[in-house]
Length: 598
Image (tube, rainbow, N blue to C red; front, side, top):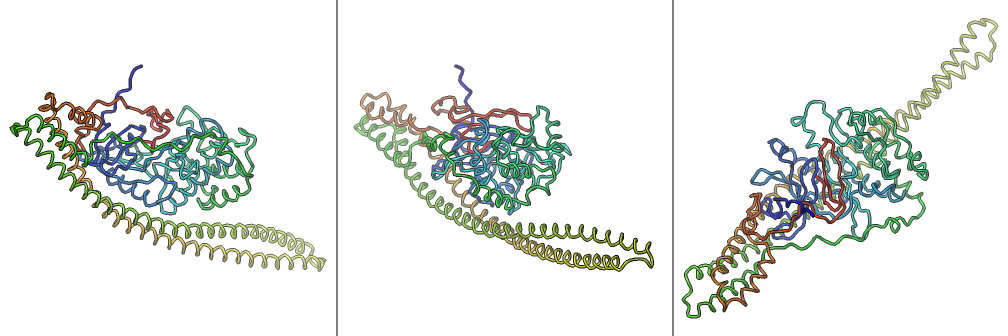
């Protein structure tokens, strides 16, 4: 069997602190790796942005701004972004929480989901979108590949939405011709298919496609021709889900078709409106055992422990072992100068590394405290904004309802006016012979018109009051958004300073590690052939082979020379893979357990 070519970036250290351990997936924006912080042992997903996108100098600031805006949402169902930046080799990277789970695309590929399960997944996605929209963040490219289903605290199908807001990176006008249409056509809203900017309503349309897919196991529109598919999104009504699955409840079908309305104004007013409807529908569903019938695997184990270089404690042990070996080889104290210098260097490096380890632990604790403070602040402001957004949503819907009632009365008033006009014409024609009843009918019609007009004005007044209340809520939301932005920017400056301090010390630690490895190899070369040292050095050699020797320097982008050869690992076998073609026509391969897709 032909082995896959090993990814040359595996085992490199990005930005002085993230060692790439395994390649998880590749797609339109770049490649995603499982990575591990070299010293604090945190496992993350690290995305390296495509080289052609990195060439655009304006993209770094844009990407940093977009990623931080998305991270301000701070919602349980949106993947956390830990870090974003640029390496010394000008590589753009994004560091996210590492997830183990299955993409929604893998589940719907098996067929329709149980109704309760589909609604549960939709409810979680909607909650995340509602919070994001409240804070002014649009996803722009929501699709089944960007939704991960995880096991979290014993809860199955815990939703995590990926790539929030980052899809716009590839639709920058400086990177593509004017009027180009971006996104995934199967999930694209009619307005996006026309080339308009995505809005919150566009994300709701994508939710409709996802619900349709979960209910039926099929997309509402399919075509191998991209332009034909876009035209379907623009003009063709979606087939009714019940035509493809007979047991779809009418309520679920109504929700789905309203989300798929071509006119954004006819969809749900916002995510909070949809959430209210979904929760009411969930309460009406009978109890279900879909969790058992779904046959999902148990919660996946954590990532494998790293094959790491020895820690500081073992450095001291190794230095002591080499010193003992040198004493055996040269019992009279006449060891060559190179051995004396090497053993002395080992002790010095172990002492330096021990001191550095303490500094890194201190700065890491500070970083954790800053991050914890930031999460608390974002959560508090997010809840306040959400409460205001719910009030605003309800007020806007109440205003719309008042106006609809007023429109009904306006039509009744018009009918009364027409009837009065007809009666007046009959009176004119009858002249002196007109009966009193006819005059009474005209009077009654005019009185009815006045009454209807007054009630209509009352409805309009109440609608304006609800609009004013909604505007007040919107103003308070804007104030909180501004407060969140200012606080986040200040916090980010503090975080970045802390990250930089840790990164500088990590780079120094890696340098010590390389130097220690080189000294170890020097001593092995001199003492390895001495019979009296073999028992000591055999055990030492075994422990060294178990670690990762001579790691690459931060930002070098290539494996270190002298490292032990690793098994080919271009794409790990574990996890379910999904293959396809992205919106730009590029082939992609994605792992089922990838934390985020490129």
